Image (tube, rainbow, N blue to C red; front, top):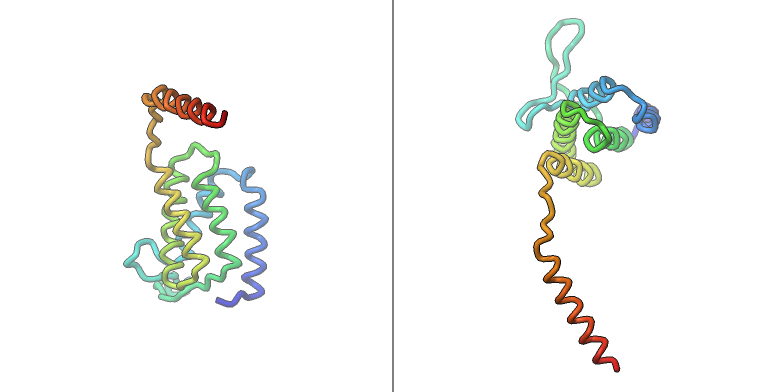
Length: 159
């Protein structure tokens, strides 16, 4: 999709927001994730894009343009919300939802850069939700003894 002047300006503003995201309050990050969900126009894979009309109170069905200049900084911000140093599970849940909605939108537009970036972010969100198993050091002593034996054989063969 071709970028417009407005898209470049909003993209620059999002870059500035990302530069100061560590200082932003939690509510601002939550609002941004909600904005991303609304911006993609989908809440589930079977929903259609909805925009409420202010005058009539009825919903209109249309697409919101999504150029790469807007999409890239939005993904960075959602990635920070998902993987950043926050202790809020609510923010992580909202960011995971936003990344899934962005992925669905990228799949619709078939923008390869957006699809790859979103798919990576969705996978990271799934990895964050899974507990990390504790490493087992049971076989370390046996492996070390085997490595020392191999090292001794190599050194004796060089003489």
